[in-house]
Amino acid sequence: MLSSSISKKKINLREAMLKVIKENPTIKDRFANAVPEGKIQGWGLPLGSKKRPISGDGFMLTGDAASMIDPFSGEGISNAMYCGMTAANVAMEAIKAGNFKSSFLIQYDEKIYNRLWSELQLSHTMQKLCKYPWLFNFVINKAEKNRTFRETISCMFDDLDLRARFKQPSFYFKLLFNH
Ligand SMILES: Cc1cc2nc3c(=O)[nH]c(=O)nc-3n(C[C@H](O)[C@H](O)[C@H](O)COP(=O)(O)OP(=O)(O)OC[C@H]3O[C@@H](n4cnc5c(N)ncnc54)[C@H](O)[C@@H]3O)c2cc1C
Image (cartoon, rainbow, N blue to C red; front, side, top):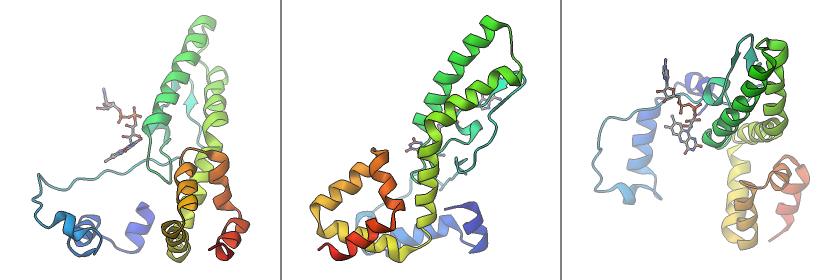
């Protein structure tokens, strides 16, 4: 959940998780005899929902330090690895040129955002769609009934062009009339 929603709705995440484990009809049986291994811990995830400067005089930010976590899936490992690889290449160029100024390192921002920004933006749009549970429930209910659609949704996690369809009203319109 977004920190803003947690404070606005005054939700205690630890209690919410325990309640789901205890009461949710599709989950509770799986945990009926479970015993906690330790205390519940959590951590805020720096989501890539905004385009921020990620370099300056003498530095480049990578991964979580650059807020590169996918706002929909919460995954940050692959983006962090891509940042690391790109930062290493730009650092090599900076050493060759003997130039560590922000005006030189800005190419790092350009390379990262050229590669990752459209994906992050799309995931941010999908995260905002979660505000409408009826819409999500509608999509998931359709997926439960239709194997092809179910497979399409699975592919959406890897395929950006396919994922972009979530943003189009025609996607929901077609779903409405497709049984
Ligand atoms: C509970 C949880 C579950 C997650 N699940 C997933 C998942 O399933 N899939 C996914 O893709 N992503 C997941 N993420 C996100 C993912 O873990 C991060 O996006 C990713 O690890 C970021 O990599 P990073 O290299 O930027 O930072 P980190 O992996 O945090 O690495 C930073 C390192 O720097 C070290 N460090 C910090 N300060 C100093 C210092 N002063 N001196 C020296 N070292 C220092 C830290 O000890 C750490 O080892 C999850 C995150 C959390 C919290």
